[in-house]
Length: 246
Length: 100
Ligand SMILES: NC(=O)c1ccc[n+]([C@@H]2O[C@H](COP(=O)([O-])OP(=O)(O)OC[C@H]3O[C@@H](n4cnc5c(N)ncnc54)[C@H](OP(=O)(O)O)[C@@H]3O)[C@@H](O)[C@H]2O)c1
Image (cartoon, rainbow over all chains, first blue to last red):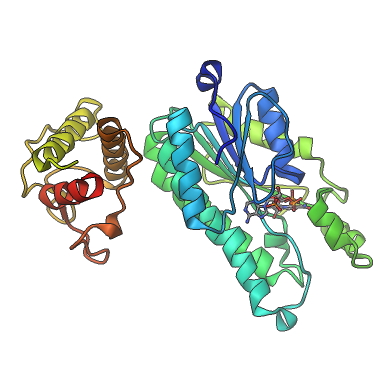
């Protein structure tokens, strides 16, 4: 489970839970909120890659309900509650046409991008109920409004995440908790580099974006900062597409 | 928790604290038949209030027993997810079994 118990000063800090922090966007978000003074609890299936006194890594596969539950229980014991949840971990692979997509690829997308986000939201939103101004952020993609060929499973699961976040936004509004979605266009991560190995995929995708360049992770962190700010308390159930006019 | 009376007392304490915080409007005296969830619920808990109640109760159980305690509705004997009704008595039985 978690690598070590938080120190007393850490339990005074706002607590951010971020999934998929070993690389890519999740890692950038974790480092960003550590720099902003949060204690960050992150997870991935592999070992943690962030070395910071206020960072706590737990090996969790978000596809496994019981692993997410055990992680949430441990954080509840150690920190008492959660102020910020970012459901980032996701699978972005395969650009196969629907007619060619194997069932196990479909299952993978469902398990990681949909079920995994559901388990995460369910377990951690409960730990936010007594935290004033708590925030939930999920990560979608501009592939949802683009209806891009080859993204049937990926985009469908991201559309599901957007809808789930909006419903949760309504459910948690009485508690003062906002829930919003950041949907980036292409970023430079291991996942997108893997997809870009396929011929001119990167160029074709960039052409479809309104801002036809790779989006920086600092730009995504900036959107997260906006959602987290106390003045954004009335902004909930929104999807911000970064790099695309929907 | 081997003592069922104690379980009912924890339910009472939890509802009292939710009444104090304004999550529910009125204080209620809990007995076995008090309907916590479902049609005609006496508790005055809406859905989010019920989640708050369960979280609060889990915290109290943890304090009481020194162990992690998760109240999972579908694990409660006699609880039907399609027609969800939960009385304090049924919940107290479940708590007793959970920690006993
Ligand atoms: N890259 C893009 O261009 C782009 C664009 C739009 C949206 N997005 C979205 O942004 C998010 C992050 O993408 P990324 O490009 O940063 O991906 P990435 O480089 O592949 O990183 C994914 C992270 O999630 C973790 N992870 C994957 N499956 C997991 C599981 N089942 N349980 C726990 N952790 C898991 C990975 O670690 P382990 O492998 O060790 O588990 C890793 O830390 C995703 O939701 C993605 O859909 C990405």
